[in-house]
Image 1 (cartoon, one colour):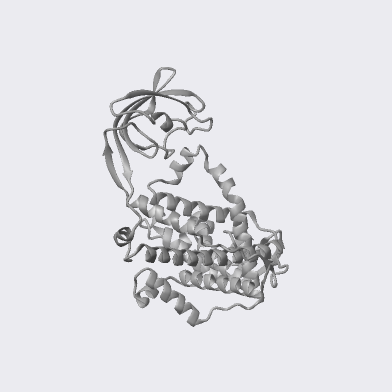
Image 2 (cartoon, rainbow, N blue to C red):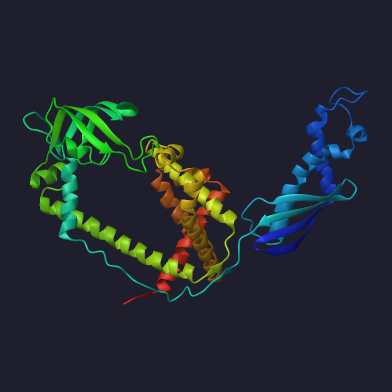
Length: 429
């Protein structure tokens, strides 16, 4: 095989690749064996005609398509490796010449990783923001624990107040016509939760069990249903049940019930310690992010659109995965937000662009600083990951593919590069 790089402009590489007659012949024979049963040649049983006879009837071009599919991919991969290119997309293939006696010549046009011109990345000045844990933070956590452990009891001797959970039936009308999706029976609604249209829940305050009241609201202008957006509506509501939260006292008994501690003071101390640890992580992460962002801002790189689009695809796939864990999916989310996929892609593009640029800059710094991942570092990370998935290390290793190992190594290299940047940085005063 012979290959040459014809040109490299705007991150588009054009390669001319020559496949020898011997390699092409191997591809032609595989094409023949794959397709021979399709041919019905006079004098031969169907599928039994020799290749030369078929080529005499139809011409050797009859086997070109599958032969090309057989020989081009490995020839392209070999050329990319030989020319030390890093493609970021599938190539466009154009056949220049093909003949069994001469071999195959084809051109491949492909987008490659762009050149990165680094600016300052050592000695970057960044602010180390302090995150102090206050008594108010502790009290908020305790209050959340009280909310979580509150008892919900039925109320019959008073009307609805904010914070109550009610059971209601309702029917919605626009212009005196009941509209689709505006009806509910035995619906649980926490007053003040913002679950319903603005103004709905507040109008239930003061209503008693058995009351039937009219709730007058207007749908928001950006409401997901265009038929209802911006229109005034009346909901006829029947209150069927009122329940309230009964909060437990903050004392030693509470601490015993909700934790492994015997006293409230011990629980408070534990909450403070955990929040201070969280604050330390947040401060470290914020400082790292600022250092990385400045190193990225100082670099110059012309990022191909295909790399941004690929990153957007990954981000949308991750978002869809998160939504499915919540019982939704991307399609349902877009309908709810009244957006189409193109609009959502535009929202993600700036974030995707920043991620791609950050990745390229960190990779270039790693190369320049000769950041390498040792076997010990790799094994340590594999052991940590195996524990996270509750698997034996050896079984975990066996399940990994080569690309999985490379991905883990890349992650370690990125973190080592970030550590290098942070260690050389200067804390702003």
